[in-house]
Image (cartoon, rainbow, N blue to C red):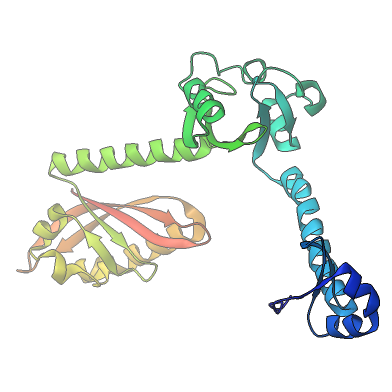
Length: 292
């Protein structure tokens, strides 16, 4: 509703005697009726009242929508009181704990979350309930062994809320990425394996020092060059067919080929090709080069 003008004030006695006049005044701005000098009632126009009632009704409807949102959330939500008893939880929480929601109401939190005893999360829940501190972190073994759970602790007047989500897949992806980085570091340390990242158009996006040294150029010169341009003319068609087969879902390919260095020297090599798969489409390929 628009900003309300400063109201007029009138005593109850004067209001009764001049009701017709004050009713007209209230159509323009609110009239405050006082009793013994204190504000007691407010007379406003019907339009202002309807607007006010509409805003209040909307706020009530929004407030009433919150439980439905929590019920539909994919994350588990557990409300606990200050005695660590479960006051409420949504269906997603019951699914994560693998027990019916009705059976969990009123239970001690430690009885529902089997991995809570001995976990560092215990101290954070204490601090949420006693000092209204928030927390967010990944906790291992809270629901099941070898499972990672993302936990958000939110202080509430009743006690607090635990918002939980299974993040085991994300943690496994992080571990797999660490393994790939370690493998790349080991390949570089070996010193005899060249590799390059190719776009879907076969242009070189990145190449390691072993490959650039083999060709006899620096990294800047080799970037955006088609990889087949580094091969002997008679080997280019076979490489193109192998790369097309990789992009077509044929899996990794290995072929014997010949590279041409900057000074024209022919170097027999073995090429290994594998696709780099993005979320929705191919992101290109990786080619590994070793001397034959």
